[in-house]
Length: 263
Image 1 (cartoon, rainbow, N blue to C red):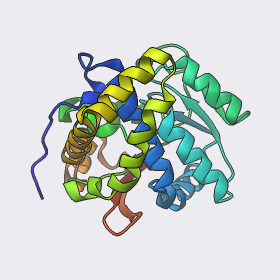
Image 2 (image 1 turned 180 degrees about the vertical axis):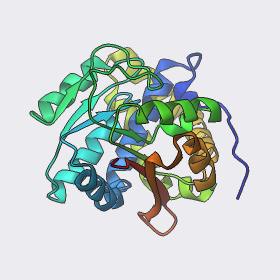
Image 3 (image 1 turned 45 degrees about the vertical axis):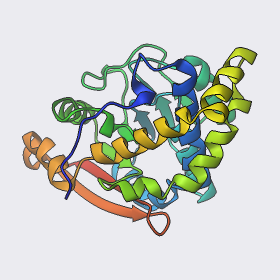
């Protein structure tokens, strides 16, 4: 397997233009949706819910809620009985989460206060999920996030829509390019639309940054061995499973779930 590389990504770099970051994140959400990247996760997640008997899911590192929205829609389409999803993040995106709450009444809620995934407040009771986010953290912090997610929980479910192979990102290219080319139309203000147009239609900046971010994301993904090493401190008190899923000829992702053993 290729070595893991902790390189920067434009979409989470504070110094990158806000219009560029929003274009990349928005285009990724559209790609996850149109390419049905998260659809193969429905079956293992449904099994996870049944095994843990979870009624509440605390979604960690939710960002603007894009992956959560897509995943909930896939679960609905498959007829899965939905638990309550509580979105959380170190930097709460309250406006975006309020829109999701209106879209999924009775299903989506959110924690308005910052939530550090390494030290989750005891009041947030439920199984924990980390969807398309663990790769952002370097190894030491990723381990702290995983162990923090396990604290006080009966189960943890982690998923990434990529594996450590740039070809897994290339599988998203057709949907991604179309989404990116439309992104200037989705700017929230006239100024942002003009900024996005300059970065996308007048220069190759958005496409180049998106290709870089997607490639880096794949090279940041953790292997099965690395994930299992992270949870070793928990000993045999948890049962862990890992699986791969395929959403097109090249597109491949990974899920990793843990359930606390009954004593």
